[in-house]
Amino acid sequence: MVEKNLRACFPDLDNAAIEQLLKQNYRETGMMVSQTLRTFLNPSPKIFKDLMIEGKQHLQQCLDNGQGVLLVSGHFTALDVGGRAICEQFPIAGVYRPHKNAVQEYIVKKSRLRYAKKMFSRDELKGIIRYLKQGGIVWYAPDQDYRRGQSIFSNFFDIPASTITATHQLAKISGCQVIFYAVKRLDQPPYYQLSLSKPLENFPSKDAQQDTDRINQGIEQMVKAAPDQYLWVHKRFKTRPEGEGKFY
Image (cartoon, rainbow, N blue to C red):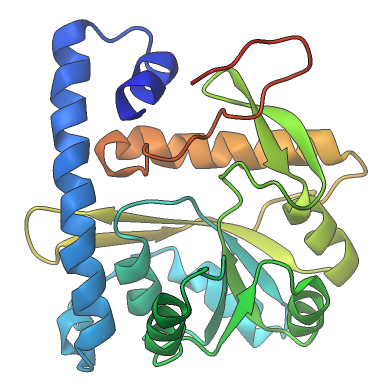
């Protein structure tokens, strides 16, 4: 699965480079468990006291102006660490996929609500829109092959990927700003790098395809900046355009 995704997304890498990236990704995926547990179980904000957020002024300006903001990210191994870190400085709600296991759902949601203002399930569109209209900040990641919601094919690493059009729709209905948010784990202090872009100009447009392509391109740039830390275990290209064979 991981190797299949890596070879498809990085066709210019030779076998040795792919094998090296594969090992690094397995390492980062394993570290994701300990990072997430530390995020959930350590109540002290001191673990993030030296953390800098590049571009935080863009988010602060939207907050000062009472503008709702949709923080768009991807599924990276430091996802929960980044969420906890940015919530220490800004009031942010999250969007997540509820877990089928009741115990796991209780633990994950309760842990995230210790630092997030609110947690929306991905199907709570009305609640998300209302929150954005009220000037709230919502984090979510549209980079997985979701079966629910309106989806179109949009290139991700030059491969058609079934992608929800929710970013376009949420921005259009709520009038919120859209900002890219990236988190990267470092080997040295402060150990995590958080980055916020300027609000996207002329977004949303009247074209859902154009906007969805733009979002996928932004997430692709985040992945290229830290390819070993992306969640390649996901079957991103499972749904194929009509007439194409299975990817996996």
